[in-house]
Amino acid sequence: MAMVGSLESRKLRIIDSIVELRNEHIVLLIEALLDSETDFWDQLTPKQRMRIEQAIQALDSGQGIPHESVMLKMRKKLNQ
Image 1 (tube, rainbow, N blue to C red):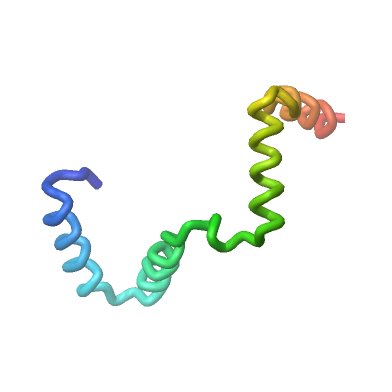
Image 2 (cartoon, helix red, strand yellow):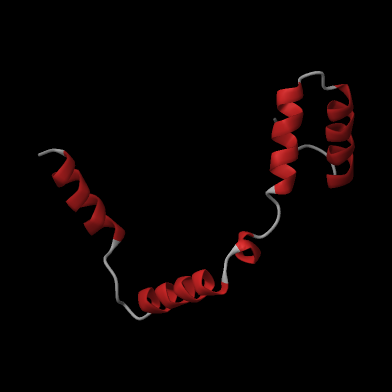
């Protein structure tokens, strides 16, 4: 699907398409997509937020294991 036209005209086309929908499954998917626009951060507990912030700080300071190293180790383990 090409993104041609202004944002407003594209939104109106989407609305027109939704109005014509007959498939309930697609409507449910659209509802789930719209509901997912809430920021996941707001759904986390204070402890979860703190742990994520600690992990980011640790990575920023050079601590942690590079992704490539973890993937190599896992590949070796799975191929045994």
